Amino acid sequence: EVQLVESGGGLVQPGGSLRLSCVASGFSLSDYWMSWVRQAPGKGLEWVANIKQDGSDKYYLDSVRGRFTISRDNAKNSLYLQANSLRAEDTAVYYCTRHYGDYVWFDPWGQGTLVIVSS
Amino acid sequence: DIQMTQSPSSLSASIGDRVTITCRASRTINRYLHWYQQRPGKAPNLLIYGASNLQSGVPSRFSGSGSGTDFTLTISDLQPEDFATYYCLQSYTNSRTFGQGTKVEIK
Image (cartoon, rainbow over all chains, first blue to last red; front, side):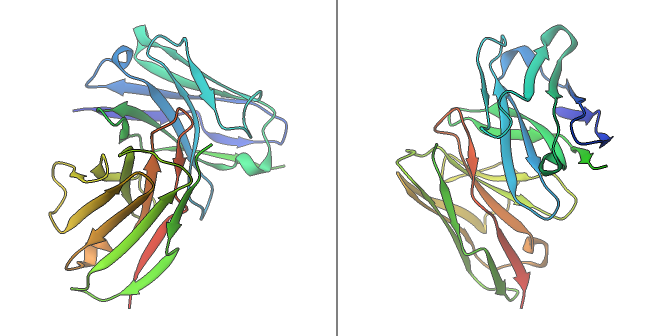
């Protein structure tokens, strides 16, 4: 079964840092682009960042560029999001997802990990 | 960046109704448009990919159409399990964008 499982969320103070992880199973992470997508409480979906198979290309949402870093370890079948200088507006459920198919949709998705930025 | 304008933001409908949700891209995205359903507390679930292709396992009452800048998701014969929020996603550019979402509620 193709599956993604996120971890690493939690409560952090403004200005703090967290490292989110996503472990893939049922497929080889090295074959796919991957993305992080977030959803603030009661709000819509927002793409955050993506990374090429070998890590050589990365793209970011403007509001997180310079604060967040996406990375991967294909040997561990794992994707990461290092989130620094966190703000209240970064509070959200963070999902990892795979880029798939000719038209490159997102599928599957993990169950998400909740990040709360609050003092 | 490509902006995705989704409408309506919410709608009320009855069981058995036909429902239409639209997404408009700020510039052409060919057929790089996908539709997701999200139930409360759950991850999004893929319904339609490439504008009009039904994902395996998704009921045939769901359909998608469009290309270029204008796209439509149609749910015919609305069922109780279809009350959820629906999002479009463009994958034409490396910076992906979602529509704002459409919440389908019971009338």
